[in-house]
Image 1 (cartoon, rainbow, N blue to C red):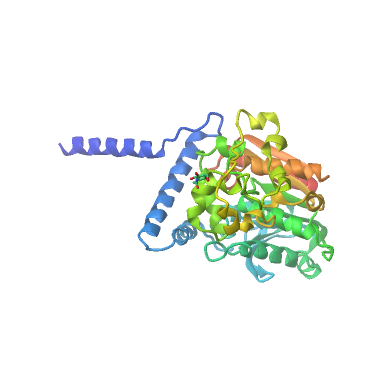
Image 2: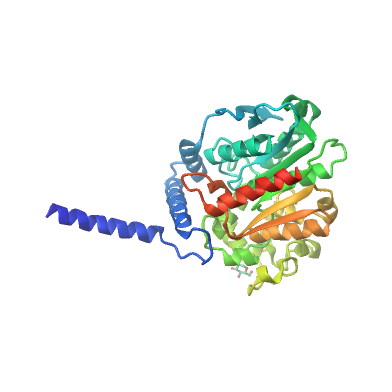
Length: 409
Ligand SMILES: *[C@@H]1O[C@H](CO)[C@@H](O)[C@H](O)[C@H]1NC(C)=O
């Protein structure tokens, strides 16, 4: 009968969907089913854009960004508590969140969104909601920066945009225009945005001409180095959504404007083999997780160090050694001049050790650095604090991030 056939077809489709969605996840990760569904959504969108790319329809990033803006972009809409406008700062597009009312000077926050230097926008719903909440809860003016994205823009474009917007933000005229207390300004961002925030904090901290300085830097699961794709966290979480290990290598190559065919080489650590003369012992020690991580994070993992690799890689992509792209490579003296830090890390994130090593190096350089680690967290969780996903660890981390800022900014 028709009914029987429909039921059968339904059952087949459902099990195919379950097969597509199901993913063995490490035990201990927050709300595994939500993460699986998120992953299935990401994977299907990625696969569609890979197919379009292979067919020559358009660049995969263009399709991805088109989809994201179609689903996620919002107008600058004010609410009772926060006045929201789209503007530019230092020539860079921004969305500005200004809390309504109150006579006194406000705190100020420059925020850089994540998305592998290639995706996302200050206009996305999740970032709009995040910055709106920060503005309201912290009585703070929040400037969310729409820096240029790959593939059109490559390093150092994103970095220069982040720096230009930050310098403009810290100018006496802009602070006065927005009614911001110059002694209470912060730079922050998540993932690749955390990378930009860290790089900007280093540059401005070491710039003696800069009269007004950031009081704090708040980095949310930042990406900070590309020399070792086999840190303990890269090994432990290589297949954990939503940031799989190969995807991070691809984001790096896109950001650095490098040949995408170098991906397998990066993933085998062939680019940082011991015969690469461009990488000195000093640089290696800055990303040495065997000494920079505590034993409970190193676990049973062993470093992957190749005696001989592909020496042409470093010559082809020297930016891999540039601290403006990879802030973990900065010298101790540079780190020592950066502001008080908050670094949020997640156990189930390939970038966990980037963040943990940075905390350790900041502390060794004499900077007060708070490490806020989530044992059940996954990469990107804070951006999923809001409905319809409303991740529980996302919500917890968001509340703690805001509470840290409330006490320290
Ligand atoms: C890594 O380097 C080794 C030694 O030169 C080489 O045999 C291997 O093919 C390289 N792997 C990749 C993916 O480039």
